Length: 390
Image (cartoon, rainbow, N blue to C red; front, side):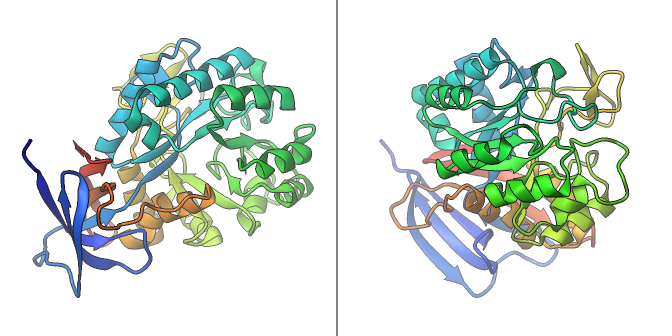
């Protein structure tokens, strides 16, 4: 069997200060690394960035396939997960939204079975995100989650799901005003689960109690909330001001305006911000009506006949470009929101770039030659020695 050698030259992102580096890979393993004083790209060319691992901690499906579907199959999970590297993603948290106990059980069991049947899928799935069912039952705050399945958590249901998932549940989004939330948060965070606040109409005191109990994230801050709110206090400002909470943002061009994105990014700072795709099950689909959902000509996905957004149709590179435009941050800074920050939130480290290790990384071309209008392309992604092109 012939050996295959590859070489990657560019700037290393997600590790602090940008460093020019050349990485040689032989048959999927790092053979050598050379740090250089400056990159080798010519004037006017796109700058090549090497990202050691790209995370998406909230993705609901793709191509009319939902992780929440009661008929979800192992092959569908594999299909969606194996599509992620072409988008630049190497680690993800499949996300189930509020559904029946049976739907949750089927979803986590099917994802677990997919991990057990495909080693690449098992490597890429860093956990499961349950967005619900203990969210606000109020219209607006509830978003696109079905009202009939909103309910409080019970430890019996949680432990049954965790067992069925093979202990893969790593992130739970809940509304802290739900009955028993502080006790639930304390218990599951002690077991290593990250708790996030979302789809909530909570008061300042309820948010503070949740943070004191161990909640560390706000899910898609600025969204999953009523269209009309008191000027202050309201759950957006309270969570934005809470230093104990990181925040995930959807920067698809529909969920947040540039001004709100800029304000929330400034409130959280570069180290506590996490960019998510929030892929809808309709991600990758053309404009049209899909049962109770609709994709309009601009790519916005809504509950048909309502203004309520129902996930995103855009991929992480689009979100990265939009976050750069809104904040004025450069790519190296924004790259931390899809690399270092989500890894730290989940208590994991970025892959070590060590000689002999299987190469995991994503190669992006970034053109910042026009101020405020970055152009980003994913060139290729490597996971466990397997190459994926965009």
